[in-house]
Image 1: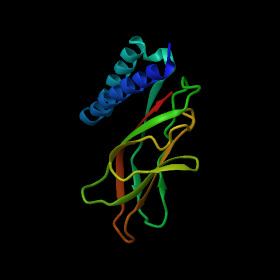
Image 2: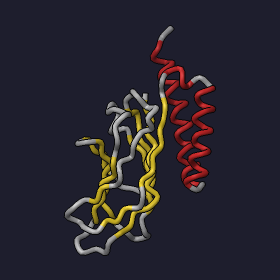
Image 3: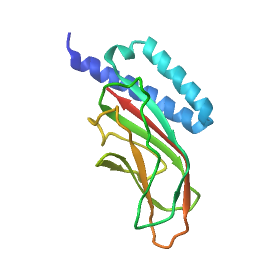
Length: 162
């Protein structure tokens, strides 16, 4: 039995679940999204995806006031649940809200490894291979000096790991 095709199929299935979870996050309140995502994770686990020790975790951070261009404001740490004891990041999906017209510079980081966050919703594999057991943080700064302060809300992150 060749393992590579099985892994490719697993990743494709995980990405389909990921898109479904992202759509749920966009369409529901935070509490309802967590409940829906938990249901998805349970169904995915019972359908055999858990046999490969792949998984996802979801974290949220409180609103963050960003007031300077020359200094970053850091979100609260986005922590994996205690049940995640091993694994490497495969991909991340993020979502946050900023007021209309606000321009921010953003990064999502784990220690010194960062990926630029250019939009309020997105996904990346740039952090692939990093430990899924360690916290991540959003780093935001104003795009223009002397711009009015901006409050970033609805900070959410999904980490898919293998």
